[in-house]
Length: 106
Figure 1 (cartoon, rainbow, N blue to C red):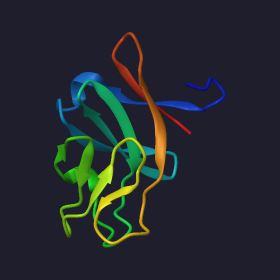
Figure 2: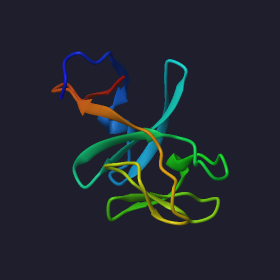
Figure 3: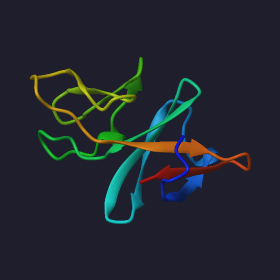
């Protein structure tokens, strides 16, 4: 990961479910941070269709589902996996430090 990012602590790894997300505030951004299949992901937390928090949705097979209408977004790329074409959400760098601190880079 790039060291030129501004890394901000957003919690400790024990604060996240094994396959789920949590909303954090990073400056003015609402970010959904996810722990899934042993990896960390971070996405803009607003579904572009209905404005629903994506972090409230279930995580499975590398995607998060919007609870508003069932659209699914790739945790890795932010691309829409199921739903009408042409939508995506921003992704952010995320890492876990040796002490368990989770950080988002912007």
